[in-house]
Length: 338
Image 1 (cartoon, one colour):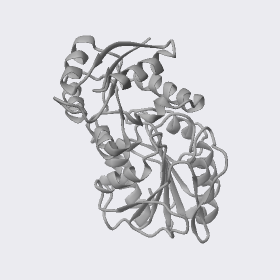
Image 2 (image 1 turned 90 degrees about the vertical axis):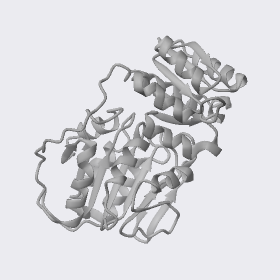
Image 3 (image 1 turned 135 degrees about the horizontal axis):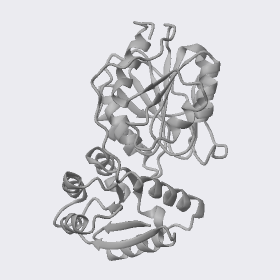
């Protein structure tokens, strides 16, 4: 049973969320709070397995409440807010929130989407007892791969991705010599806000991908919600086909297209997330002669996507998150036989 605390200043929203969660017998709402201060007090009193948190509330807002709770508890927190506070909601992931959903998802009658949300919340709640990851400063040996010219990096992330990407991109130098094309599964639909938020964390230029974009060095392209992003001979383009492994955009399709266009001159990276998106694409990158990287279990919030990639047998390097940026820099600059 996932014992849940709901923090939101709207009684109507609290009722909607309670009904949504308790439609699944795995959830039990054990408390409600109408502002951040009350949310902190009830979190410490009830020690729930999961907390849902609004952003804009009286007395104390969600960002401050998350910071206060995280000082005392390792309880997973999921932000549920509105589109106009999306940039703040992504900022909440840096403070310790695990995921962000828009409120209107919970009011819709979309069984598939709602099941995905409930499945994600169940998996997120399971990390409560896990010891938080602490970077290991000791050097780790990684398999050596042949040095070659690199033309692009393609990247996949899902649950836990915003925080991981903010850390990864912050560590990338402004003169990174190749473009980065990424799929971050974005249940909120606020893709432009995500790109704008991520842009504040890195010297690289982050933009929401558009059809016809020709990826350039030092630029990060984010796949929009609801369309598959692919790399083509004449630049980026979209595919409006069916979801792949319940994802749209799907990293698998991006990786496959990148393997065809860049062949052995591409690096793929699979970061934290539920499911297996990116695993099949990793096979394509490896078959084309590219370099494949997956985040390790210890530093992943959810070791689903990286694990699936590793299990293909096609991953060259399994690295903690804090080691990936420097490895990408060395590989992209062709400075070592890593």
